[in-house]
Length: 458
Image 1 (tube, rainbow, N blue to C red):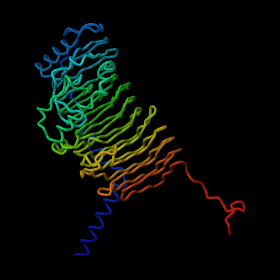
Image 2 (image 1 turned 120 degrees about the vertical axis):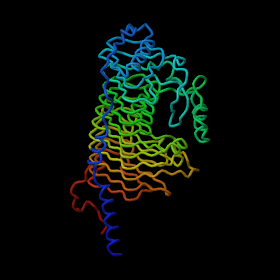
Image 3 (image 1 turned 120 degrees about the horizontal axis):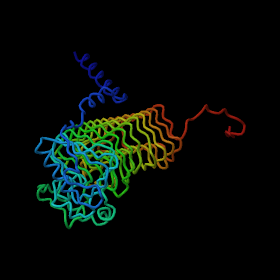
């Protein structure tokens, strides 16, 4: 009996080791089956009939507010915004069962005056829950919401919100103090007198979301923030969002998400996956999970990032069939430190190509050198990379930086090719790392034969 038990244990270990060396298509497909996005309402409202004018002069916020009230009364509505420029002096606050369609040539141009985004709303800032300026498009606790069409969402933030980063430090530090002391969220009041920039679009605690087709520019902070939400499709979006911290899509503590056919051009991360910072993440324990990123063109600071606010964990992430639209500082970037805790596991990368980067694939447990006195080490394990290509990595090709307390575990690289690279591989505190068919800095040919010119010193 002991011998049979031992054989079974060995078999299980072999299966687990084998699993980390294969791209799990069945798991990906089972996630895809759970992702449907929003149901589209049939009742239609033309925003012009609600009193809006697309003349670039009139404040159209009252018209959007009226349309949302009508939608709520009717049990849902498809709000159509024809071509024109619509000035909006304040947030558009969604209700359930609404599709906002921005037709070709339609531009939502939001006010740059911060006072228009008061009173504060329940939101999150860099992984900490608090009350802050309202995002420009905001929904809380909703279901079946969508933004579609070929129009433009312009945050118009260059002259005000974009200047706030230099003044945010005091409020940023205060938010983290509230987090670590577990101050009740309704007592974490920011807004006027503080300088924490709002997101352009935020859906918080929502289900069944579709964001498709629109062009996004000039965001005050992150462009699309999906917070504690699920069953989401982001498809065919286009970006020219180069203001400070203009992340493209930030799924935070959210699940069952498809991000596909996106043309990124961002002043920060293209996709940044998060699950809360420190105590807030540990308290809520809602991981970011079941996220599929495919057929995207990356351009910006980093293509796909996991962390650093990931204290509730990140798992089941698929990045496949993506390429580049221009320069990225880093391709795939996993970042945490001993302040965060949590985990990053079951990460799968396949068929992705970059041009020139600083670092192609970078995993670090010591992000920004923070958390040296802490003991909240993160578990990073089960990473599989296949068919990853880059023309040039100016600094490093593959970097794995674990800790002695919690080494990175179970990483496989298969068919990774970098034409030119300064530092091909740097691995610290990592267990069970496998490299197969990888050529970093070119492929070696047939070894040459010895000749008299070699001066072997015999």
